[in-house]
Image (cartoon, rainbow, N blue to C red; front, top):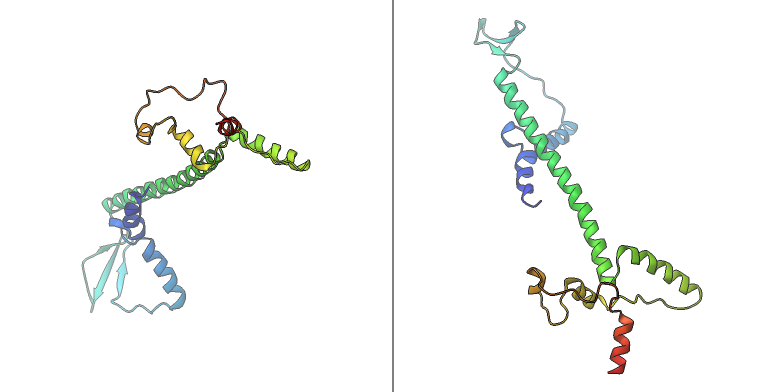
Length: 192
């Protein structure tokens, strides 16, 4: 996404090769409200339907086409679609960035609490239920923020951060049916 800022700045804000960009358009809008239009003075001209013919002191000059040529129209059309593609992909990328960013923050919060998304709902209901009878609910799978992240990244039993980056050859913790809980760890700590 950061690499797209340069393209968006050059093509959208500055206008690229196709002419005025967004900055000139905004500047024009701001200036047009404050200033009145000047009365244009210049040479008279004649129109013959397809060309404007300037008149200099009674003699006519070289005809100037009123409408742009086909090549200019094709170039302008290509620039329009190029800028449209940049704007479309920029808006799409921004939407995806914020959506995935929110999702990443939500899951980081869940990992910090030692929960899955379903356990978050269960723990919320249990907290409400136990607060009605003046008891405090403790998540049995939460070991504290730092330890939860270590478990999530697999940095337990002597494994370091390098094991997170490389493919693992070790078996996962537990047998897949039962998991170590903070209550289990607390009882073993007291016994030791």
